[in-house]
Length: 435
Image 1 (spheres, rainbow, N blue to C red):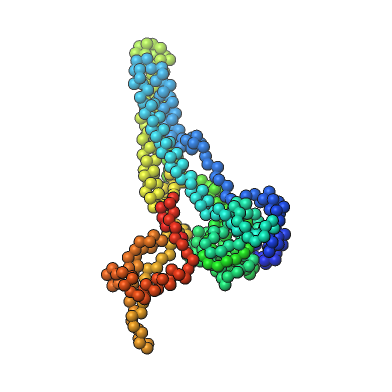
Image 2 (image 1 turned 90 degrees about the horizontal axis):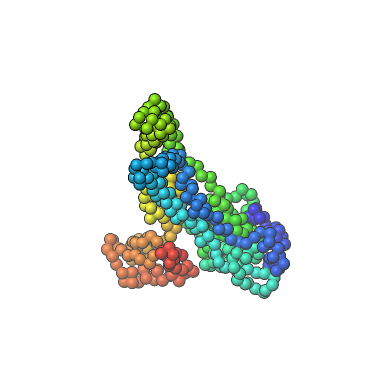
């Protein structure tokens, strides 16, 4: 249901033929499961290791090197006097190309998790109301279907895109920063939003899949699951992104094309100039042996003119750049993208969670020392630490102090702890504290 935000509660419930109090019947659940599929983001069909390897050779300069190596190898087979030494040149070229391919494949395999990282935002369970049981029951999130009546409360992760139908608490606030970048929780309501072109930030009656309930309790009808959710559409757009050649790739292609033309002309010229020497006694008087001899010289010139180390040097430099970026949590899917980033003059980026940590924390606290009529004096305490990690210092006028020594400060901290439902957990995988 694409325009659920612009419909009334009655229209949304009627669209799925569901009773807002009893929920879907077992037959309806089976029907909608067949119609809409599971409520999950499909795993990306990653490229096989051989596809990735072949992609590393899809470069004109690399193809020229590969051709030169093959020709050198074939000629080495017919070499009568040099023995194993004749194979040194083609083997060195092949080793350089293989090393270059290995680095490229390793980088792309490491970056393949960029899209799959979105699956972290998929909840495992959801609370639904269905006709086969009385009250609220827990089901696996992937079994939820459009039309399901879902209940959410503080701390829950939204299992699908939901149109609010009823709010039990005074208000319901949703932390949807992962989707819209809003750094503060958003108050939701059940009224229709008439604008059919409303963006996600304006859809105040929709709970988006993967977002979290910051406060309140509510009920709603599921209007989108899997790839039909807002976060699912992002997943689709990411997977359908067209690959455009970077400026570096375009310049290397131009260089390879020009180099191949020059090398071809020089090789033909060298071979043609020596046609008169094909029958020299040095070649045993054989025209064919003379032709092969000068062909080998032409190939040697071609190999000498090709910068064999260029692909390896470029790949190594870009790989070092991606490692430095990875330490800053920037995932690079394709190595040449590093060079493109270096040419960038303007970046259009989300702020919350991208340029900032999306972990709001208290930086200053004030307590009144004295209040006398219109005049008052207060102390300003500075608190270090800008993440959820429980580490920091409290300072007053630049001097470190113990918060417990100030009764008012201690009471204020106690109030802050007691008057909220938040919880901080340590993520063992990411090695960070999360809300």
